[in-house]
Length: 240
View 1 (cartoon, rainbow, N blue to C red):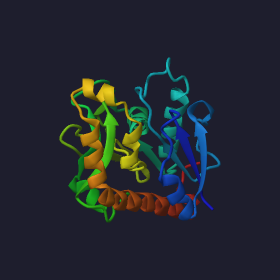
View 2: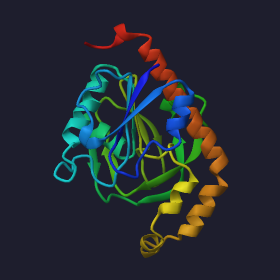
View 3: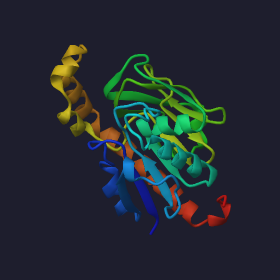
């Protein structure tokens, strides 16, 4: 069974529904917190970097980030499948030479529309996924410049960089396919109200589009699992 390393950058930012789906698909999921994560993917067939409420270069706050960025660089160099989600996508971007800005643009909260670009038509992660889909978002920081060799795959009105790929098997997604509408149950209603947002309305909308969001998320999870298995079956393609 392929071994999948999942790095949690915050206590509440776990793999969510992806873990049981991936286990059902035959992957062995190994979770670790950021402080215990290795700087190399050695011993694993794939890597997943999860979210967190800080910037990808906030090393003083999260001193494990230099090792996590090195883990991302090594995964790209060794052609080890990698999926970065939210902060994880930003870690991947910065590690490969991109730029992330804090409190940039308009925050995205709740279930938001994401649109695939033409570059996603032949992309393995987004195979079979609708041109436009809905996913949970919860961020105020953005990738403002992609790494020079990145392939830009998806965007939204509030956040141009929603998905990108490095090499053939490393992806970053700003949205949260690993969580569903129930994630909003733990959000701070008062804080959202201060920002002019109605949590009840956000929750109702997320629940309305949840069936389609689940189908999209499961397809994305299955696509990544397929990439992991294919990569594990072809070790000679990886750099030493």
